[in-house]
Length: 305
Image (cartoon, one colour):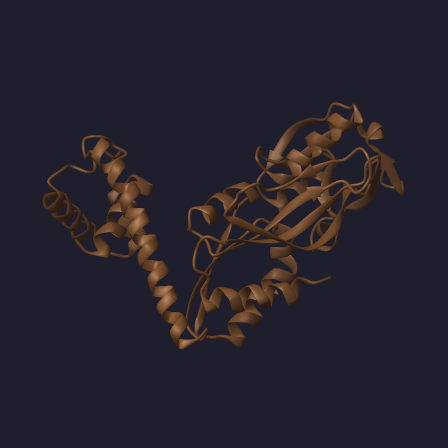
């Protein structure tokens, strides 16, 4: 059994298709099928049910997938640790970000600058909401994650936080959340609004599980108003376009209004005011490579407002 056998098997398990896995791995499908059969022969069990169209895992395959992921994580961790003896000059950093507004703005330029300064280091980038990123970090599938939490700096108290004993959450900075409206919206000329003033508005938000959506729900409940979210989207650009067109309003970080795109107006929210807390998360129970440490320091300095 070799590590490539495990990678091949997990690729098929993840996409539930030999064809899709072969394309992802850049290998010929017959060669991939042959390697999987060799692995099954060595283990003495069938791992993949080839009778179904979607190639689901057998019971043995599902159990073996857990072991395979653990083995690959340990192997990658060992390789990263050994590369540390050569210093932080080569290797890879698995990095996730939940902040689309930063990715479209400062973060993209920071990644380019880091690659220019450290051409031997490769940043493997992944974008997702905060909670999925924290799960990946806790399971050892990421080295660092840039996330956002939430807080209300005035009563009534509102807070979205992360609770994981093996994770260290480092606050980098906080920035205000504002009500984003289209340029022709009735509130476009207002300097500030209370939550009671927008109780009848239709909100456009990220999907369930997103930090901003949870923060809106908590705040509305404390303010005694019912918020309607008939439209949700995964992409910040989609939300900005829909709000600009007049389909509804959205609660967004103030920086999102400065990005290139359709025109928007930002209105200050009060009673309570809200901030998003930009934070850097890492797993303290796992070895942190010199490369990951170097990248974390680079992010801290580059993201300071």
